[in-house]
Structure formats: C-alpha cells, structure tokens
Length: 351
Image (cartoon, rainbow, N blue to C red; front, side, top):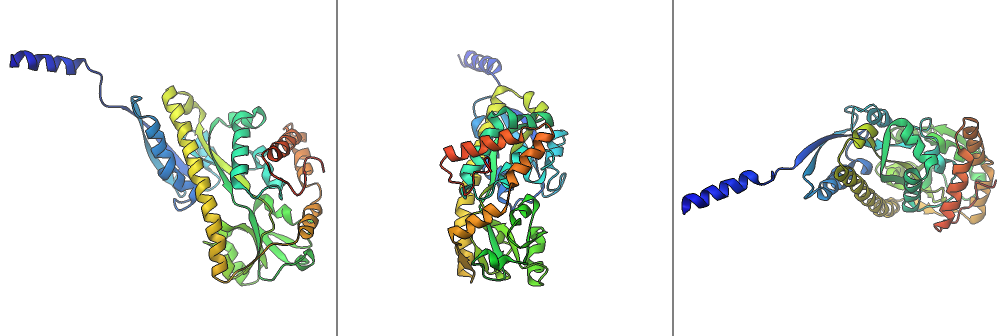
C-alpha cells in the first residue's frame, strides 16, 4: 500500500506544472541618483507593483537598477532606452526639448495651474491616448508606460523683497531651460543656471534671485541666501514619465505588458502623493527657518503674464513650421486643462 501511494505521488508531481515562474530580466536607467523622488519611485513603487500584478501568471521580473549616471547621465536616458541599452527608464522631456517638443507645452504656458497632479495626469493621458503626442514616442522607439513626473509650482526666490514688477527692474534672475522665457517683459535680466550652482552664485552676487520649485529649493538651502520667496503661481510643470524600449516591450507576454503598465500607474500615484506632501512640508520648513513667503497682488501677476507676449503662440508657430502640430497641441492642452477645472491667468491659445 505504501509503495502504491509513493508511486502515485511521484507520478502526480512529475505530471504537475512547474511551481517556478519564468523570470524576465530588465534594466532600469535614471541619470539622477536614487535620492530623487522620480528615481525612488522605481524601488519603492514600480518594481513591487509589477511583481504583485504578475502573481499567479507564471512570470516574474528581476530588475537591475542603473541610477546616478552609471550607464546614462541626466538627459541621456531617452537615447539609452531607445537604443535598447536599458529596457526601462525615466524619459524626461524637460531635458530633451528638441526630441520631445510637444511634451514641453507646459513650459510655454505659465500661470495655468499650480496643481502638479492635474498637469501630470493630463499630459500623461494626452501622451498615451492622443496620436499627436503619442507619435513622438513611436518615432523614438519608446512605449510610454505612464508614471508622470510633474513638478510643483515654480517660485521666485530673491535676495530682495518683491512687491511689484518695478522691484524686478535690472535684477539678474537665474533659472533653467525654457523657464528663462518667463522673465520676458519683467524688466529683470534672465540668466541660465543650474541648481548645483544656485547657492554659491546667489551668495556671491552673480545673480539676485532664482526661479525654482519648493521641493528643490529646500534641499538646496536656497532660502538661506535668497530668503524672500514669492508664490507667483507660475505653475506646475510636466517633466517626463516612465518609458520602455518598444521592441523589448512588444516582445513580452501580454501579462507582463499589463503588469508594467500597472507598475507605472502605481509609481505615478506614489510620486505625486509624495510630491504633494513634500511641497507643503518644504514651504513650511523654509518659513520656519526664516524665509519670508508672500503672494503678490493679482494685478502684479496679470501684468507679469501679459508682459510675456506671445510666448506660447511663438513656440507653437515654430513647431508648425517644422511640420509638427504645435498650434493643435496648444489649443487641445488649453481646452482640456480648463475642462479639468484649472483657471489660467491667460488663455495662451487665443493670444
């Protein structure tokens, strides 16, 4: 009897499917080190969510993290994923305006919304579901998975108090990228700068202020050298999202593709929730450490916005000339953002 039982058991085990899942390897690339929120979202949210979604599917994933410039520096992630040197990465349109111009529409439409969740989710939705913006990713050989990386509303941090535009006359103000255009018509002199340089340059008088967001200003301790913080409402911005190499992604089983999308959704929620908490905490801490935080009058903000001229219109027209749907994307963005409840200081699509 014991022999029969043992034989039956061994036969059943031989005939049963393997209890071991097939492991799929993937490298994740990010130019910034792991201390940054948009990098931390991978180990803290994306990776566990992907494998949670794969439970019972017969697959699991092993991720190799290549952060902090190990195989790609800041702004090089797009090319690294596109070329297949990494399967997944941060695709930061902020650092690739030439290759992803349409995704940078928010940087040419300031004073629209201070809500990073609204801005991030809107551009993410347009990128995935609107062919005009999705085409950018298709041409680059990248699949947008989601997980939008938005930036909290930009502030003006200065060494002097700002009560009106007259206070800006002749002042040197630094910022990065397309945000330099936000100083047009203010009387200030725009200077291109980078966060690592801000503290010393402010301290030594190279410039007298910077335009930056709270969650970066606090860790950089800029309020120590530029203690006057003006909440202008320049607006939250879209900086990028999680992307995958298209050839690799398309070759994966459907269960894996769905899990990657679910992982990106979880990472996006983790990121924006963390950002929302971090923004409030950053402002409170800078105030507690001596910063003077003020909000300007509506008249000043309107004068600033009007003084920017046809900032968005010129950007859209340049893209139109290149054969890209700049004006269509601008109109669609302004329409959708207002449908979602934003009240822009200017309707950039009309003037």
